[in-house]
Image (cartoon, rainbow, N blue to C red; front, side):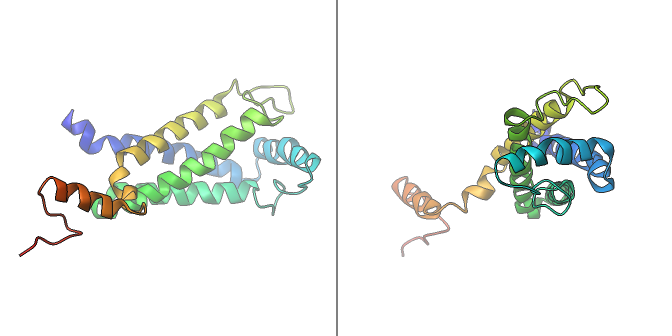
Length: 180
């Protein structure tokens, strides 16, 4: 159990990085599957809501922009996992991954894209992309939970609350040096 506690974050990191990195080929080369998802399904849907070109090449949510965010998240996750003194990088990578994949899940659920993507040739992915996205969401959320001591220190009032709690217990805290 101790081994899992100490090194389990690597399994979560490896899963997220694998899913994101293996999809980069499709996003950066303009593969037919990616063109279909971003330009044939999502861009017309966004245009019908008054946001034309959002998913088109050069758009704010184009395949290359999403792929770049996934690449950055993967690099941050891996760098943070490799160095115990740089866990903040893993937190930033997990937060970015969670944000990107939340968007992906939203678009699968609430747009014509659907859970099971039906391609132009009539074939379907059987929900594989959606299942991978859900796995990335869970792994990213779990990494943030595992690293809560890192991002928890960023919350306003957190240091003051910890100092107050420590004082009540009669323990000095780093935020408040001992009297005397």
